[in-house]
Length: 135
Image (cartoon, rainbow, N blue to C red; front, side, top):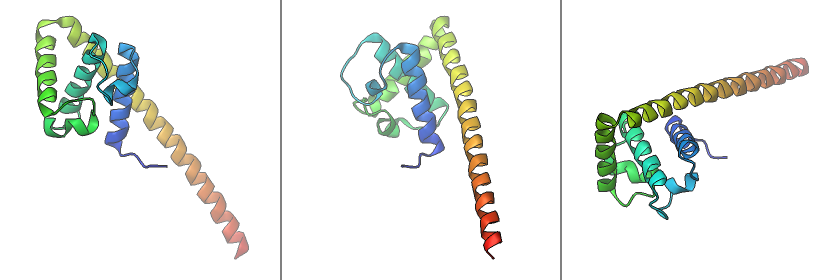
């Protein structure tokens, strides 16, 4: 099983949350097969989030959103999203709702990681107890 970094987990979570919000398949972030408005808007939200919240530069964006043609597409989507958030309050509200869902999902993920760590710690303690009895 491949170990995912926190950034990779965050990006996967963002793709999943956005796919749910915009009712698309997450594969639309990976492949450029359609230009329907909900797919384009979901990609735009993702690019804006990755740039502003995760610090991913436009030059490297295609590595995380393979559906992009190149870094210029990332720049375009970022600028367009920034503009829309200034002139269309519903877009800003929708983005804030996405951020709220990300925080909630992040907290759930942290709790799952915590529970997993506690279980692993208990298993180690049990193994140590067995080894102590053998000595």
